[in-house]
Image (spheres, helix red, strand yellow):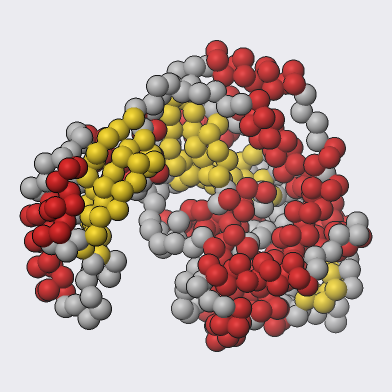
Length: 454
């Protein structure tokens, strides 16, 4: 039997090309805002309803035909495996696998619609372009194309699945550049107005936010709300950084940069997002926050004052000492050498003595005079903000990668905050409007699609 449905939005894209190149470990301090109940809808649904017929959520229909293009169960399985590869997950639980299959099918439907629309606009991605991108992904995994293909097959995925992912993303980006971006107009008067408001807002707070945006409509609002809550539950486990989840799940164009919205002020956000952000601490996650067209999950990575110098923007002149351990070094031997290293770096009295002291413990020395405090891991930021020239950080590292210490040789403090240029403001406004148009276009494609589930 064939069931015909129009497409509704779910968690959207499950994996992007960028996700394959930016997976990492680490955890986030989460704080989740629990919204009171699910959002109301405009649907006329009786309170005491009766369901006619049966619906078994355990019956999976992984095969679909989207406007004549077939999506097979194998396509779904291989894309699920690709997600596991990108997230460095050796084995998915049955529950995770089933949930991902449903999400992946929705993502493959969207991807198919985007490729079809691009082809209708005479936009195609050539085999050479796909091959070149595939090589690039392999390099980020430290594998040749042949090694990458073998690796994917061993993990239950395939070269075809990854190239299909690449094709969908490149085709949609190119479609937006050709069919949407040229019709986005941002006038000089609007840009100048923003610059004036920035000057007036000097000293006020601005926030570096990351967002996972999930589109919703009246028919699937409850489902998307529940999906957002489930996503936050996964974030709370701390097994992957927020950026990885944004690349997998967000339906906004910022998914390719880990959901990074850049530095923004509360006045530029929808009121619901502004209210949530104002209550956040750096490192916290809140949501789901209901906005026009869907829900957002927010992650605050940093804050600062508008056009005001921030000590973390200081540029440092550093010397790094590193002691490495030969392969096979026992934990006891590594700890003993690390203890010797820690005792030795305490004797450093200024950068002029670094090379001499390093020679006594066979340590490598590397100079760098362009490091911003902001670009270092948070624990090191706090230490370096308090250090004087000539002092050394405590040792840090691991037995696998070696033990390191940083010596502060100089520091150039920022003179003052600089306003963004007119071109930067214009680019940001244009990107925001392209994103809105893209979301609307995809909604239209879903609404008009004919999809057969088998």
